[in-house]
Image (cartoon, rainbow, N blue to C red; front, side):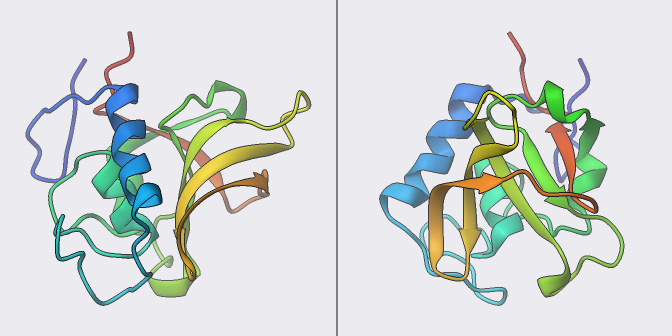
Length: 146
């Protein structure tokens, strides 16, 4: 498996590590900012900085424009813990894009899911309805699937 990170060095990360890293900001929520970096971790305090932190990408993290380049598009039914649901790619700078970490399905019909995300109120874990296009499901190339 070839893995790609921000600096193009192959560094694999497990799903357990992704989720453990995601929980650190939920346990000690960070305020949201599209300008500032977290003084402790060095990652940006927006949604893509949070996902970059969880995926252990280089600091200060990728943007929603850049993140799709480090992922594979997958079918919604293939989502696993630590994958992402994202409106990303060209034209998604600033408020135009958003990315969330997938945790688990919240219902048998797969219409809503548990997510970890960085939003205007800070870092949260919550249930959200599964979004329509332009949101897509993504798997980071650097994840070490057992």
